[in-house]
Length: 353
Image 1 (tube, rainbow, N blue to C red):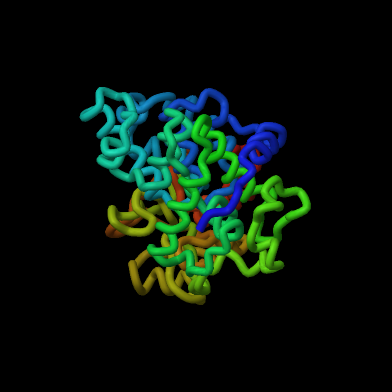
Image 2 (tube, rainbow, N blue to C red; image 1 turned 60 degrees about the horizontal axis):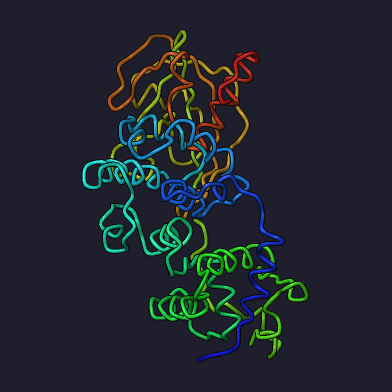
């Protein structure tokens, strides 16, 4: 399957219209690695402040490897999918131990680093080392599927391999890294789910446009709908302390702090806590409902501010002093609950800078 691709037009369009991002300045292997992992399942506009702060905290693999996991998770707080941060931390340690703190330039060596998949490896090879390797993300897949009229379901591995092969074939022989990044940019800004074909530099050779079937591509099987969870959240304070639990390793919220929560709407919550934990509390106020999504779930959190009559040891939980809260990483939903609690109880306290 071969069609003419006007790479000159694509490159010209990209160089004239590419967006300015901090990771495009001085694209070292490390900066490319961090940015590409952050950009997975996260909008570029959201990533910018996280990337800049990360580079201040952990400017290289050695610094990242020396940091504690809690520091790394805290720096990642709010980006979601925290397994990405854990893998970055583990990968940095591996780079220090096996490669002297420098990210290798060979595909087979990059493949040995924990957490580096085909896309990230290709991105590092292309953008940092200027090798001929197409970094195929969702944006590139959409461009290629439309341009070459790929009818296969892109959720299947065979279709992904076909897209990769076609994208590799599109790369310019002299400046393949420009083509690779231009395809990503084209998918992000022009060849969107609702495309702007009149502005596309590849419109003259796009087969889906020629057949007037652009919005039929890419072909994907329907995704599983989100499951809604309803949870009662107990924000329990005793003096200057709050009751929290740290997520266990291997769990969805591993290494993240959360308040006690219970499935369903538990009413009255003080009575439930007294019966379940023999913890006597009094109702203070209800906090705003919080909605947050993770994996295949959307959780609706109904937080209640309670005051414990006495501090009591609760298995798997710990009483944390207010002064420590700013240093702890929270899951996104519970971080919002905490912000509501602190804003209302102490309007002068700024939790997140």
